[in-house]
Length: 284
Image (cartoon, rainbow, N blue to C red; front, side):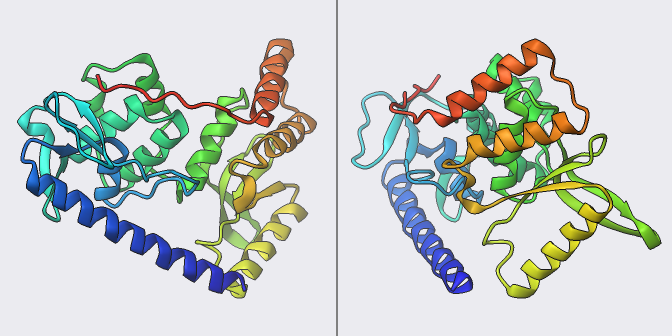
């Protein structure tokens, strides 16, 4: 049942991406002054966004003032020629410019998801640090990590670090008896606590899931606390996960201090509250 649902989901995403690329190609051919930007540009480059309702479905362009295109969000502005290129017949911001824009304008976790994937493809963040960056964008660049294996893992890392927990290591390599090693998605070696994302897209067969559970059980026998986050953690159970991870770290010796504990509890409470509004930023 799980495998069939995963395949259906993958086919649906491929169809959505095909429709999106057709629309992007059509509009940039018809309007030479329009350039696909931000999260839409990341999709053109094949970057996977967080799979949640509405994510990646906003079609964004930057174009001269006064241009309106039904079904697209148009940001007014002009780009330097060096920030514009073509991919698959679509006029789009370059990977560097796309990463720069996403760092500025996407919500922090979503921006880090995009930057992690660009980093894995060889993007060099150093030139971006020399461009005009807001403090918020610098925070995003500082959180980016090329070792993240999936968008959900990126999201988990940002969420855990953003609530005042120690920043977890990514793809942590742990030694086992007999000269063997295993890797954990996220972990704190000093406290022997780990968080693993158990997503359908990466654990699609019974054999995969059996291997994962056998590896985790061996780690637990050697003193590790391995916490598994399922695909429903975003956003429904994020607060529960934060509380479980924080308690595990404290039990293993982490001391957040009074101010740190206040911050942590406030973030857990805020995560439990549903968001009722979303403010759309303008292009700058």
